[in-house]
Length: 364
Image 1: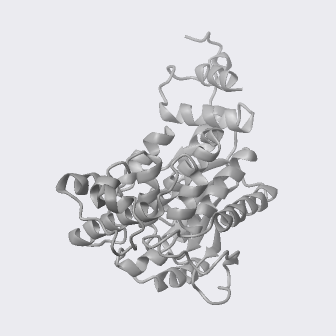
Image 2: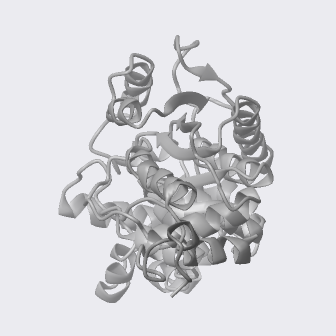
């Protein structure tokens, strides 16, 4: 089907390849959907929500209670992603997979696995079983969307503190955690010391390596960014995740909403639905999904390049290039929703443009 799609693009009334990445998008969608004329008329953004125990380490500018407040904001249609989704004719589906909110939030689908993760700086964020349950929530969510005819799903999330687990996942999955042992000391890293005793005293070189993956998240100051990097180093040293086991890494260092997005990616790929990756949190989830099933790459499209430093490294590892450069770092699925018109444009071009034959001309 990909070859047939390429042939179709080449006979349209334009110089070969002149529509650049739009042609690439159209060809990839054709391969995914199994038709030369793919469609993304029915679209949705899934906003997975969860809280994080690591916020008690002071890694965020906002308290974890904001997660619940933002869930209500989504339900009221007043968040940034709601505004953009309305413009793009995109349905918003908000799922509580692990917030600390007591009871249900009207307008939010409650699929809570547990009331937030544990503090990953002191032990595993969750059990493997809980991570699998959260993944199942994502699969279930996308199954429901598929029955509604959705053809493309944008990845969104909300969880105060979630750039910390995302950077931790990136450090391990990208193979950049080898300097952790040096940062905390070989003796400490392999010992039975308590988490507090295992806190790293990183060298300037190791701090620089940490900061290649650690960003400002909600807008923390310079000294907090370094503190955040050290907390991530501590979390990796304490949990010792197996980089060859993505579920182990996800359970020990991830978040419930991140696991939910892993399930969305896996479920969407199985149903030939396109997946638009948002920022660093969504990209971390996408890489976990790729490590679990490499073929999911076929369904993935990168929307934009976040200001979070780990984002580019994650996209490069997956093999994706961002479509937009807007210096965003909000999350929620905002960047992913903004990229939907580009996929729609590719679909319209391949189906609505005239061919050279239509004009009575031979292909140049």
